[in-house]
Image (cartoon, rainbow, N blue to C red):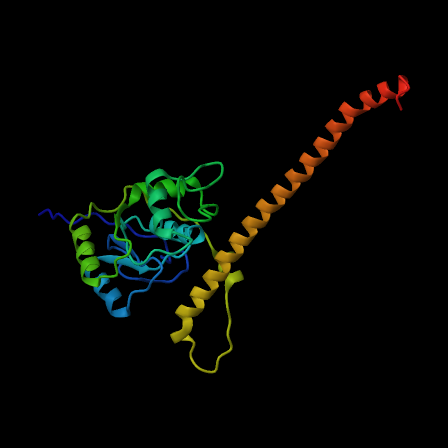
Length: 257
């Protein structure tokens, strides 16, 4: 007797493989859900798991954040759908950048997401092959701005009903973000539990990291402009001397000066 259940595969050992602000459910489920710059309640997450989600969590940056999403998706070939929900992240424009990455990929030389709207959309810690695997493995459902639990749950169920089974290739493992996370780790010696404040703390850390990236980029640009200005002035002075010296010599020879 045959059944029509989709064929499943084992995810990478220890899946999810990249740390982050997420909750993991049944790894055999076919749907991943991003809350963008927001957070779903524990009750909502459990509803999503029951409907067919394998992993639910936020994604706040258009570089390291997306790299972790890629790593966790391709490490589990059972995930075939990616629902992009929750509020967009100002400045980072993470959702819009992910859509462009899925649509157009990355430039293999610069590692920049093609036509991405985010401020620093560079995928530098996972290989281009991992990005291509992500693009092939999942179908994107765009629900940016929506935090409607009922609508998202219905979309998860719809995706599960179309589950084609695991991606033909086995789990692909890439490591990303460990050093960056250690550098950005914030330790606060509170006597009471910090859990109620962790959302605020995480947002603050992300904001500081983002602003430092923008400042570094602007500093490099300003230094490049300053160097170009100095070179331009030097070149102009040299050209003026080259033109003026023969003229001065002529005046000297003719006795004018």
